[in-house]
Amino acid sequence: MNGASTLNESAEKKLKNSLPKSQLYGGIFGIVAAIVVYLVPMQLEPIAHTTLALTVWLLIWLIFRPIDSGYTGLIFILCLVLLQFPTAGIFTWFTISPGWFQISAFVIAATMVKSGLAKRLAYTLMYRLGANTVPKFMAVSVVVVFLMILLVPSPTALIAITIPLVIFVAEAWDLPARSEIKKGVPALALVSFFLIILCGQAGSWVKTGFSLNLLTLAMSKVEIEWIDWFKLAAPLVWVFGFVTVFLLVLLFKPSKDIVAPKDILKGKVEELGPMTSKEKIVLGIMVIVLILWITESYHHIATGWVAMGAVCVFAIPKLGIFKSFDEAIASINWPVMFFITALMAMATALNTSGASVVIANAINLIKPDSVFGYYATSSFIGTFVTAVLGINMVQGVIIPFVVGWSQELGIETAKGLLAVWLPTVLGGNLLPSLLPSVLFAWTFKYKGEKLFTFGDGFRIALVAFVAFYVVAAVSQATYWNLL
Image (tube, rainbow, N blue to C red; front, side, top):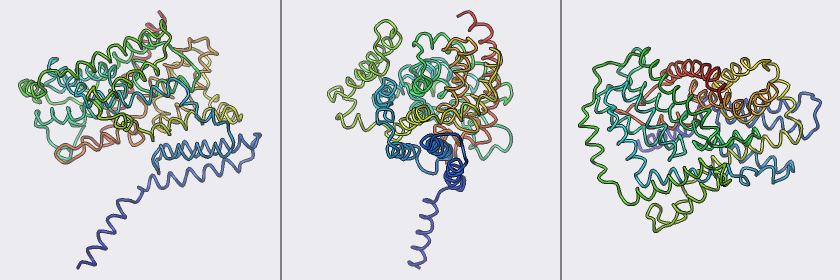
């Protein structure tokens, strides 16, 4: 019996450790595709040909994730080193302000969570704004999430803060488990997946919303001031949030009987007690940081260096947030840093080797010849192309060329980049298996079950796409023309 039990445990362990078929086949496909690209005759220098093949492998593995994206990035970096690309070009991400903003953002997000300030802001705003029904909760979520990104520059951190709030409200509403609803999109799935979309989109309405904004700027070789980004993106993204709420409620019709007594929300806020001195200090520092980000054009201190200054303060042990500097540094997600470093290195290697010409020729097949055509094509690339190829492929390879089109058409650089980047942030939600934040949200359970299915996410994302197209078209035809 003991032997049989041991064999069963061993088999179960192997099953848990084995790759899902999609990841396994994707990993094999990436290697085969790279070999095929390497063997196909092209009018390229050998180094450019090799770089192109490695890029194909990198992007396919980032999409299917047979191993952690950070590990894939590290392998790619090593390959470039072995190919004798200049190390300064490979590790560009660690030498510029956006790279240090990314590092600092991890520590800032951890500070907001550990201090308790992020939780207090989320719960207090939900209670004060009366989010006790599904439509109200969704509308209030737009305000709460979009405001919190100013202090928590990490969509994943926002998900970690707000999804438990969704579960708490679901308990107050006494919602059934996902499996108990056989038709349509249940209220729990509607609220939770919409919140995930919001957390991602929240990062795009301000330049410092999350590090991918700065990475996109760096890879496209474009610079946009904080206030200019705000003027173009903020109205569009905020209106998108509320229009999406309207369409989702209209189409999926959550029951009007789902109501949480306000006393329950009030009780949750009261459990937090009075605001601590630690929270007040963190809030004060972040207000100063935000002011410095907004006024960058006046003092010329880049966002990354301002964020690093905040980290130097937050990491002081006597402040009581981190016990030591080592604990503060431990909050940095180094696999993500390796992954982003690899993307920057990929762009540099493609350009310096000449391999980018092949990609440019392929993308130029859908090159628009008018301003209207550019905006329409950008929205399509940002949503559906990102949904299929993943945000990494679009951000790292396609967007730099698309921005080049806008410059040829005489479109202002900021408008050209944001026209394709804003829908790209949204696009990953359509097939959420490609979106790390959704996979993270899947780890949360309500009554022992996941909060939503991929089918729920697909339908909700399609509605969000429609909302974005409408809002973007109107904004670009009217408001953007006034700026």
